[in-house]
Amino acid sequence: MYVLIVGCGRVGSNLARSMLAEGHTVSCLDRDPEAHAKLEVGLEEAWEDHGGIFTVGAALETTALETAGIEKADAFVAATNGDNTNIVIAQIASRRYGVDKVVARILDPARAAFYRDRGMEIVCPTRVAIEMLEQSLSLGNGGD
Image 1: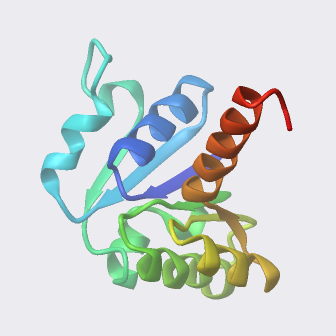
Image 2: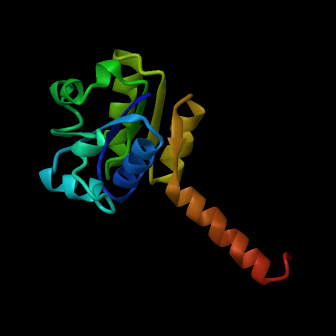
């Protein structure tokens, strides 16, 4: 599977290494050339020596998306640090390029729910953290 991940921060880079370890072809796009270093954490060789691809460019520019391989992507993950960017590029990947599996990370729980209700596949780490904290608090009170 060809996986394109946009945003190589903590989430994107860890996901990229995981997908690469599973044998997928992984391409990462980030506007910051220094993000490349995050891809190599824990690797004994360079990211590219393991078969990974890294492109420097802006997520909202179709030229950068195409250079990163969006036209052959089977899966697309929008994991930048901006909810608006992730929403827009996820829609571009799905609608313009016809990527089969598109997932967007959205930090704002209300916005995540809004787009999930409209059919987008959304991961909201804030909502997950809230649920885990609520569960921890209820477990601490004897489940009451």
